[in-house]
Image 1 (cartoon, rainbow, N blue to C red):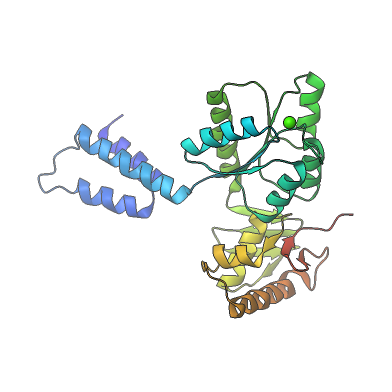
Image 2: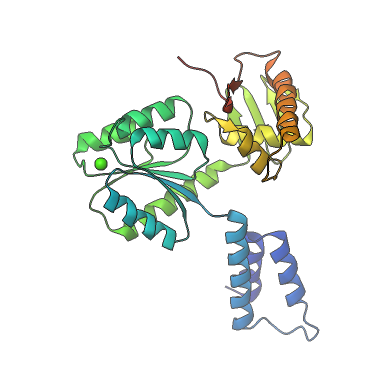
Length: 283
Ligand code: CA
């Protein structure tokens, strides 16, 4: 691969800031070719910007055996994942509905609510987050049931930690490529690149904030999105105040008018005292 090709690859992969740095560095007055050190530098910059823009991945571990949960948490945190642990099926279900995760590691034999029940309910409600089942249940029937219930992958205990990491990377990669630039819920479609929104084929005009809020709701479809999440992730405000809650409520009301008033099924629902869900209510 030529120097230019390597440099181009990094520039394509990296953000605009990295791109500027690369161009600047390549424009040396003597016009000399990039050295190995220069390429290494490019790679480093591209990698760190890539990691920075990617953000830390959030993983939820639903596991009742404390020793296993602790080992998983420590191993994943050492890999710089952001980790939450739930020790019952119920707690796992609650957390998934109230926080955004990039991946769920789900044990099957859990107190209160077993893993399959948790998974089935979450998928029925439209949760798209990748789920990897980690379990001692190792028959073919168990695997089939797990995957049919909506798991994306299945790993039998005991397993090699390096294999778990590889599977996590693969799932997140897949999720990110699907994460994509086109989002949809029923007949509501959003193109993130052209910033066009359509409902039942008709164009819906949104303000910048309405668009950002709808994108967030679409990326969390089927899950309850709280006012706190909207304040943090859409308005980028950490300390919430009553006036902001009012702004959020007004924006939700406007958005609902635009995307739901003239259309069926109704998609934007309020969950009293908790927040909002985008998705069709199923009994
Ligand atoms: Ca268990």
